[in-house]
Length: 116
Image (tube, rainbow, N blue to C red; front, side):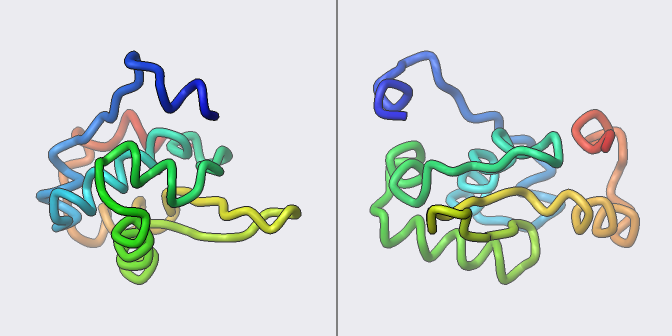
């Protein structure tokens, strides 16, 4: 993980639907994009914790904790603790599929990411 943190080839893919359709602030959208990048397959999780998010989007760890809590509260992110007590975060794919069908968001925007 440490080597990845210093790798200048990392990137965040922030889709416009993350901000406009989900009505997320820029910091919430960036946080969601980091988590989405790890878990969009519906099986994987981000296990880098709050420190990884904080360093990736250039905020304090406390701010990262607050943003993740907001995303969990909105239902866009699932949070659990793994068998070692480490935090594991994932995009709530099932909720996003339901959200998109209920809100009539253009499926063309998100369809490629929600195949599962």
